[in-house]
Image 1: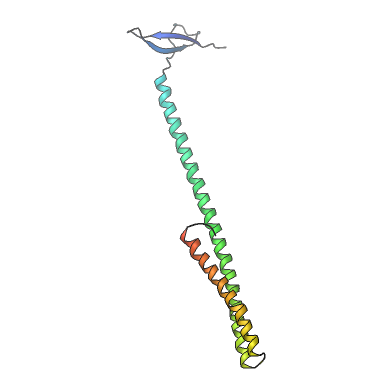
Image 2: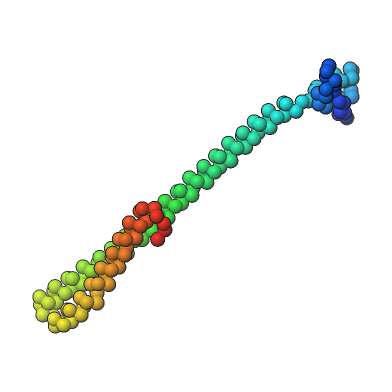
Length: 145
């Protein structure tokens, strides 16, 4: 079993050099290695730099993951908006075709066609324009829809 004892080392000018760690089983007292704070400061600096580097790499990885998730969310929202806009366009096209065929073949009176136009066309156009506005808003990066 080895005990390590501490002795205070003094330099030639009488100032303290820091603790001297020695093994009592050494033949010569005080022949143990001297430990100085300067060596550990360099070692600590390397550890701090490594730790800082690790933190920076971790932050970069987290930012990259957050950007990737944000991009996926934005793509998902855009796909959903395209689907809704396609549905609105189909309703608009179906209404126009229904009106054209109905009036051409005299399948319903002119008053019914007028009321259908007054109800469906503004609603469908308003919904389509709203979705197109959301496209521009989400592409500009000004905020989430």
